[in-house]
Image (cartoon, rainbow, N blue to C red):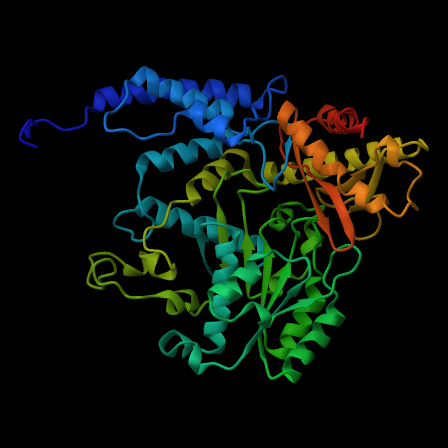
Amino acid sequence: VSKTNMNEPLLDNSEGQLFLTEAFKVIIEEVLCKGTDVKEKVCEWREPEELAALLDLELRENGEPQHQLLQRIRDVAKYSVKTNHPRFFNQLFAGVDYHALTGRFLTEALNTSQYTYEVAPVFVLMEGEVLSKLRSLVGWAEGDGIFCPGGTMSNMYAMNVARYRAFPEVKLKGMWSLPRLAVFTSQQSHYSVMKAAAFQGIGTENVFKVKVDDRGCMIPEDLGETIELAKSQGAVPFFVHATSGTTVQGAFDPLEPIADICDRQGLWMHVDAAWGGSVLFSKEHKHLMRGVERADSVTWNPHKMMLTGLQCSAILLKDTTHLLKHCHSADAKYLFQQDKFYDTSLDTGDKSIQCGRKVDCLKLWLMWKAVGSKGLEERVDRAVAHTRYLVEEMKRREENISSPFYLTYVFCFCSVEQPLFVNVCFWFIPPSLRGKENSPDYNDRLSKVAPVIKERMMKQGTMMLGYQPQGGRVNFFRMIVISPQLSHQDMSFCLNEIERLGNDL
């Protein structure tokens, strides 16, 4: 400190701004130009030890010159997975929307926390407007909500608020004041239900799994029977977690009959629409969530199908009695003073279990402003159309008796002829296994096919898609078709590439 001129700022703004300008040039070239070019690799695979050495991750006493830092940025971009690439089918997010990305850049530059109107006036009002619009798509004229750091947290919020409504004394007295509680969800629901039960002290053994049909949809009759089973064991049901768009099969639980059961039993009905919620934009496909307006809460992740970028997740509530705030508030006097000069109801931070909360509404708002609800509807419809093309192309190849592809299931309500969502699950049957379905080691050998092909595609960098086992099914591919940068050519490339990578197996 003695060597520092205290009359001069420690950081030079002009130097920093120059660096930022040069860094943006690198980002645009390496991430947004190369990263969306089909002629470039989806990933530049390196083993961990080699990658760590290439990146020179060690942090040292002295800083580095700016030209070296720019090279660091190039290296980070080069060796990162290009999730904006048209042939990245690996997750429930893909592609890039440049208006949303601009909102993300602006959010980072403004660097504020969304808890009070005094430090985030624009974003308090903006969040309220965006949440209101999302609720209107669900079918609610009013309600509550908040943006959360991911769908898992949104689902946790729903369970916590549901418990508070049923047993408000839990906030003061804790779990000792409660009976054994019971949660109900389908066998194919997201693992966040188990995490929420563990995190909130309910216990994973008190999460009752409801059977699903062949499409992966919850069977309402079994839900009713499972609720009665829990009661017979001395548990008190309070929360039903339905899913609109399961992670693997893309299944939509039948919400109307589930709502009937919840109404009769007086249970909180939550719909995890983190993945499938965007169908509400589509006149053609919103029927998949028929009955969602009867739910008490909904999770929706715009960072998935809507392409806002990670992370952007909302918990929406029908409630108008401020349950969200009553459940989570701690009344911090240094933030939420009640004698402020403006309307303190605009200080929304006490609804959240967080203190500091990142602004997640701007990127969605700016994108929505740019393309409108019609543009978002077109994205949903186009993704489903691409999925149907992919399935038809598989079926066309299946007509050949030596076809290597076998569909495990493509989600739809009626038949595989008309897929209604964008999860495509299939096996690739290599030459050595064709016609060997009755062999005793067939499933064991088939289970090893997808992992080998996945390894090859990543090491060659040509594309990425996921695989998993499920129930009695051995490893199969799950292809997610959502990016608006996709074309039919990319669909055909995917099938051709799998054949190329797996024909020698």
